[in-house]
Length: 147
Image (cartoon, rainbow, N blue to C red):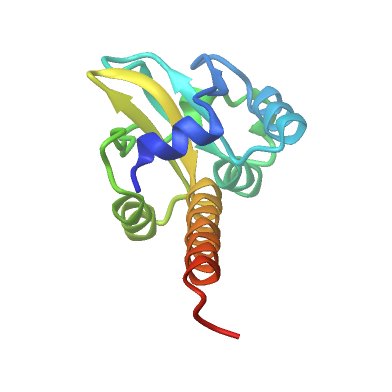
């Protein structure tokens, strides 16, 4: 199971913003799209940073008087950890767990090709386990073994 397979199943659309996008605009995007983070585009791989729900909440708590004037480049995580399509699902989950984050951009050949969330990975693993159970049931039914 690879990140590439997850992207193939979920799609590779990415919600992104410019570095100058305001925190209010980011909050509106995250809320309306029901997502947990947006990528900030720029840089060598196309990813300059990432802004998560958690980043927005921290900004409100730390700078309540200034929060409406803050922009993506004021609160984004700049050193974004990424995966490739060949990264295993287990490895991606370990990367997210070790870094305490829930979103992982996917880079292939230096180019942004998608983003996965921990939810995407869990959903994909459940789907694969269900497929395995169905395959075993079919095998057992055809072999005449069982009740």
